[in-house]
Image (cartoon, rainbow, N blue to C red; front, top):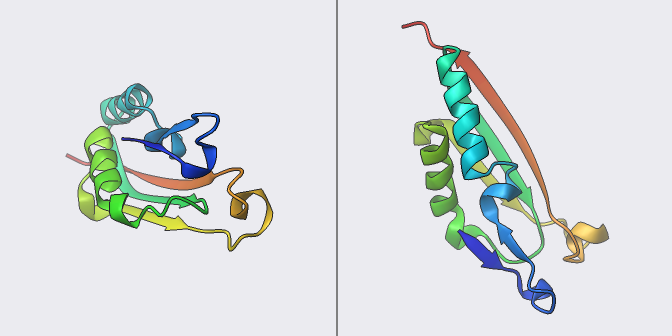
Length: 110
């Protein structure tokens, strides 16, 4: 899913929300395939996206569903949060975004 941020309209910067989580479709497929082949599966994924605008609440479930699909993970193990930086520094001034991710891989014992 691509969203053109209002603040960046002049430069037409488009943000692929999956890249905001440091994952592209091909990268996540390689990662999940490699982990699966090594006998691992996603135990938990905690992803936090910090940006002032746009508000991601209307898109959170679609983003979460896409992450689950890309990683082959059950929706119950994917946690997605979107936060603002309360108008502090470049994040709060709409000049940048950041993502924090933690993935727990569990050994598949089957």
